[in-house]
Length: 341
Image 1: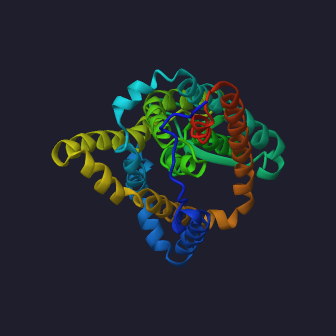
Image 2 (image 1 turned 60 degrees about the vertical axis):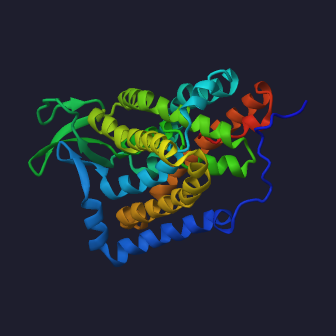
Image 3 (image 1 turned 45 degrees about the horizontal axis):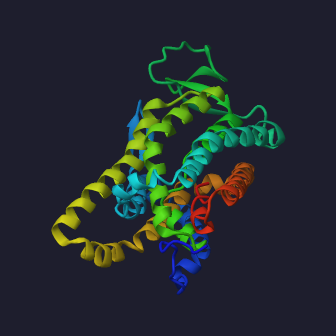
């Protein structure tokens, strides 16, 4: 059976920069840690630039700017007319939604709970604690319990004292729920997948994330006996997903209307090509400069968290590849679906 014309035909391969992306990522991680050690004042000043909710930093402004430029080049490529048409491709669309929103959040919770709360608990420390903000609107007295935490007074501020492993669990939950977006086109290209189909999957998952990320994140944090920062969740979705999505949609319509679709595709999108990866690398430098000292002092902590995340990725990839191989007609439609891990 002949494959549809939408199957990619570009055989020139990837460029030097993309080919050695792993090397650049490693160098940016090292650069970020060195920046945090050599110029801690700069890193601290950048880290202090944040949007606060209830006196707690929720959105890092430098990170938000980098993530915007990482997401915008993807969002501006989305043709929402094609998203509507994609609804006719029930199997690939249904599969990516099923894996990302009905399976992945719950396997992440189960895997992280087992490793962090059982297998690695002795290494993390069963008595180790973390302090987090009490939920918005809660009027709890000092000594009261909330989920797995106890209200304590820290520098005159009421905080929840929770087991440290549960804080790590919260991070895994929030990270595990979010489907990859900005780098999916790169993974799809490397897999020789259908670029158009991959882009449509990015659009569908981005729109779904606006609705389900906060709902599932709040639910699983509650199951994990952790406070649910609803304001922080909603603000994060608005800044990190909705803002670049709206900006991409509006600027796409305006540019095509004023400059024409040929100029938009041949000139504008070509100009944007390196911006996503550059913004990704800048984000890594910033993140590791902010937390470099903590990482250097607690290298094994990164390992304890990385193991369940890696297993989760492999499990979801295997499930996605296996199910799509058995149910979707063409492999070139299957491959871009599975990198949403």
